[in-house]
Length: 497
Image 1 (cartoon, rainbow, N blue to C red):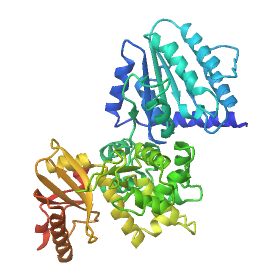
Image 2: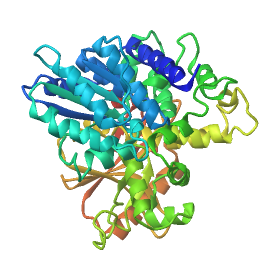
Image 3: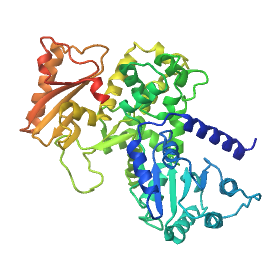
Image 4: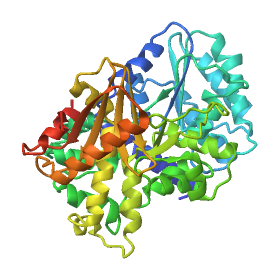
């Protein structure tokens, strides 16, 4: 089987699997796309996001598979094979008995416009999936899309052009932030599709017949990060621990090399992106630009800034200013005090477990479940879970309508607070995030350390805001002689709301 036919078969099979999965948790995204599809003008819609997050499924559900033309780019294949694939898709759509293969993209899109012009009146939805993969070097693909939209589709009122891509850097450069022919051609705000949250994950697993507890679902999130494709691989006849061993550490583990495949698909030159991710996997509250440059050995230039932007756009990291930082204005986009923090659970799991399985133990997860390795990881992973559910934490604290800034703080004396919610109601919620198998019992040592941190924080920052100590944990706070150090509690159940 040649590469083109092999890819076509695999891609078609993958699409069938996706369509078979229960579609949940994307109501707002569906509404946005359907509103544009229902408009009385031509629309140019862009959807992007990391690999496996469900972009294709979202679009197919929104359009109810009513495409007059649908094609998917082929990963890492040359222009001639991309053009063959395009011609095959056009032949299937038109029902023609002849396969017309063009040698350039201008003519290929001209054939597409001629076919659409032959169709009866009515809305015509064109879906080009994995658009970046079709733009091979010196192919003229972008200029052809530009011509197709600007000189033909945009002049009509019945065309709905939807483009989609996992290669975020390409989508940003050529569609979303493009300053050339496609500049401001999108007819709506580009849609970035993010992973599922805990509530959506729970609904997904319940609909598929799983009976995992909320703590197990949370741990599943701490490993997989709410990626629908990963969840679809879980076997409900196995425990979560068995599933993790099978998917990530087994002899034929389907997700063992997933991290490298993700970054290769997202970024054409991914080695330096992975250096940044590896450095951040060791930094709990994050690292400054200068700290990252030192850790990675990369050059301090615009390319480094672009890599940070690309990784953040995919949701792997976030950038924020630590509490009380001095904001310098030499560079408005990248301030020296800005911290970059990993917030993708799967990436942390990759570096803390998959990369540590030096002896290829097929039961590495269950072998280390009660080990210090698991304990260190679970604390960091739970903090990431909390950072990705700040909206739910705010709701539990009754401050959903209050403007806030989530940040961290660290002092010259090595004291640090991992999560501060700086509120506009003249209050700061100082959050302790603790992953526990039972009610969390605050100890005398922890009470003293918290008091010292708060004292140092107030002294060094000079803040006059009220301080409320908050514990975010799995099953709540155990009442003892030290529990009065905590003024409010957010439980795992709150994070599912």
